[in-house]
Amino acid sequence: QVQLVESGGGLVQPGGSLRLSCVAHNMLFKISGMQWHRQPPGKQRELVATIFTGGQPTYSDSVKGRFTISRDNAKNTLYLQMDSLRPEDTAVYYCHSLVFNTWGQGTQVTVSS
Image 1 (tube, rainbow, N blue to C red):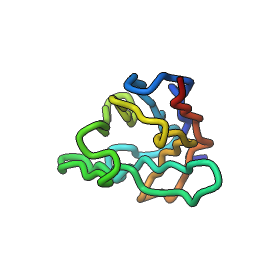
Image 2 (cartoon, one colour):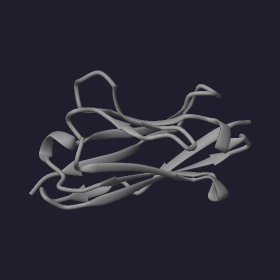
Image 3 (cartoon, rainbow, N blue to C red):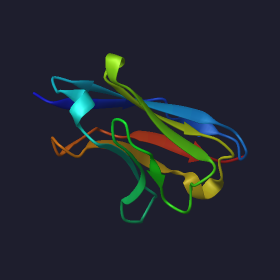
């Protein structure tokens, strides 16, 4: 079955960086628009970034200029490079396939000193 598996979360100090990865299994990855979403504690899930093969990525205003979404279709992998992290970036981060409407299990990112 189609499956998305995230990794790369952890605890980081404010101003630090993390790179999240999302590996797609049993799907034609290159045809799917892909997204990163996040759910802060006690809040609703929100869209962070979107990328299509051959298209320009888009970002939420809260992460624009700090986060970079990218994809490697040869490796069936989606990435999220997160720089200049802030405490308000603390959340569970999920990847999502638009074509296959599939979510990963999530990876926790905690930004704290």
